[in-house]
Image 1: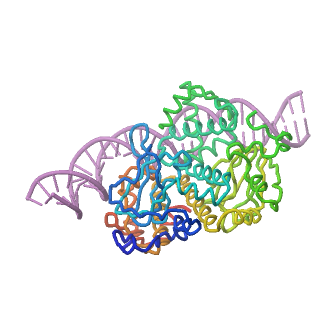
Image 2: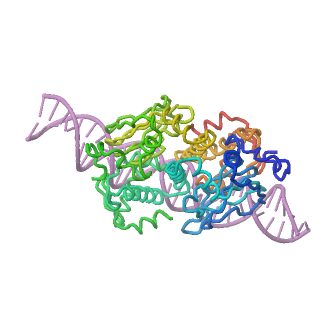
Amino acid sequence: MINNIGNTEVLKDICSTCIRHHGCVAHKIKNTLSNFPTPKHQLFRASDYIFHVGDKLENLYIVKSGSIKTFIINQVGEEQILNFHGPGDLLGIDALPFHKNICTAFSLETSSVCSIPIVKLEEALKQLIPPWLFEFAIDKFKQENSNTYMLGKKNANNRVATFLLKASENHRVLGCSNTEFDLSMSRDDIGNYLGLASETVSRTLTNMKKDGCVKLDRRHITIVDTQHLQMLAGS
Amino acid sequence: MINNIGNTEVLKDICSTCIRHHGCVAHKIKNTLSNFPTPKHQLFRASDYIFHVGDKLENLYIVKSGSIKTFIINQVGEEQILNFHGPGDLLGIDALPFHKNICTAFSLETSSVCSIPIVKLEEALKQLIPPWLFEFAIDKFKQENSNTYMLGKKNANNRVATFLLKASENHRVLGCSNTEFDLSMSRDDIGNYLGLASETVSRTLTNMKKDGCVKLDRRHITIVDTQHLQMLAGS
DNA sequence: CGTCTGATTGACCAGGATCAACGGAGGTGG
DNA sequence: CCACCTCCGTTGATCCTGGTCAATCAGACG
C-alpha cells in the first residue's frame, strides 16, 4: 500500500514517484541536454546492496520506490546507520568529488531506483553551470552531510573527542595550528550541541587532561596526543 | 592568533579568508555577472545577533573571520544549537525558499561576514542555471540540513517520537496515509540510527502504545494522537 | 512441526543528568 | 587601586534514564 513495490506500472511510468523533488533530476537533465543518456531503472530486492563503501562510484541513484539504508562501518566493525532513503531521495552524491563511495547502501525491501552514470552527469552539469558553482555545491553537500557524524556517537568521550578533532581539523584547513587553539564557545554551548550537560563536558575534558591527552586552560586547548583522541572518538 | 579579529587588513583583503570554499561565492558570482552588486562586509561583535528566527531573510552571509552559532528555541524555551560556523561557512541558506529565517545566528566573538542580498543572488543564479536545478539544489540542502533535527533530542521519547513524526511526514509528502503505515526497518536499525538500544526503542514504543498515542503491530504503525506525539518529540 | 529471526519484557547496573557548592577571571564602580 | 559582583568552569553527591544481559514469545519459512 505504502510503497507499491514490484508494481510494473510504476516502472513504466518514468519517474512519476519522484514527487519530493518535483520530478526526476535525471530526466530534467535529459530534457535540457540532448546528448545525455536515458536514465536506467533498476530493481533491488530486500537485503540487496546498491553499492559498497570504497567502491568506485559509477552511478548516482534516485530512489523511486521502497527504502534503502546507508551506513558506514566503524572502528569496532559495527554498522552505523547514516540515513534511511525513500522515494525521491538521492543516493551517492556524497561520494563526489573523488568518485569513491564513503558508505554502503542496502535495500531494506524491494526497491526501484533510477540510475544516472555519474561521469555523464558531471559532464552535463558542467555544461549547465559554472565549474566554481559546481564545486561549491558539492562542497556544501558534504559539509551538511558531515553533521550526521555525531548521531551515532554514544558516550561522552566519543562526542567530546570527535568535537575536538573536528575543531582541530577546521583550524588546520584555515591554515592555523591544529594542535593549539581557542574554542570560541562556552562549555554550555558545547554540551548543548553534543547533547551533554555542561558538567559532563567539563568532567570529560578534565579526564582527557589527566590522561595526558590534551592540555587545558579554560577555552585554550592544546592537543597533545591526537592518536589517543582519535581512539576516544572511535573512528 | 587563530582568528585575527578586528584586523583591518583582513577586511581590506576581499574574501581572502574564504579558503574552505575555494574563494568567496559572492565575488565569483560578481565576476560572472556584471549586474550583480558588490558584496558588503559587516563586522559583528561578541553577543551580536546576525539574524533572528522568523525574520525575513534579506542577506546570505559568508563568515570571513570569527565564529557564529546558529540555534533554534524549542517548545520549553530552551536554546538548541544547530551548528557552529567559522570562516568560509555559509549562513542563511536554509531560510530558502521562503525567505524566512528558521534559526537565530549569534556571534560568539568579533566576527566579520560578507553579506549578499538574497534576492539579487536568486536572480543571478536563475540566470546561471536552469530553475529546476536551482529548486533541486535548495530542496537538497534543506533535506541534508534536516538531519540536524535529531542532535538536540535528548531522551528516548524525544527521539522515537521525532522519528515517527518524520516517517509520517515522509509518507504524507508521498501521498500516502500519514497516520497508518509500515516501517521498513527493524527496531535494531531504528535504535542504531537514533543512538538507542533496540530494547529501548521497543520499550518506548510500548509505552506510547499504553498511553494510547499509537497502535502497534510489529512494523505496522498507526498514529492515534499526533498532538501527543509532537509533545513527546518536544518541538 | 521445527527452526530462525526479530520483538518484547524483566532484572540489574553504569553513565550521565541534576542539584549544589566553590573558585577564579574579568568587569565595574567607588 | 581595591572591593565587589557576575559569569563561567570545576568538582562532589545523588538519582534516574537507558544500556546490557538474558529469557521468552510471535511470525515467517522451509
